[in-house]
Length: 124
Image (cartoon, rainbow, N blue to C red):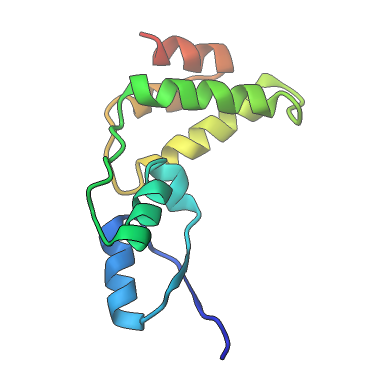
């Protein structure tokens, strides 16, 4: 009678399906994995609703990440004391994205020392 929520190491739709099969859980919590793969919440939602695995994956290209990071930067302006805060959060986010998927363009971004530098690298 107590709802159980599976949490931890659900980094892909396959991880969720394996967790569901092994535990019988019907509720799941994802965190860092949603940051690492912005399409994962949609993939999981569609699978849980339809049982289908046909939701497109997220391609880790600069073209896909750049608008997300730009929007994130804009949202951070409200709480940020300086550009360094936002730059560090972006680097942290991209570190999560590379947790399971190597992304070749992330290393130069992580070496950037400012928000302007990050977006310069992203737009090159």
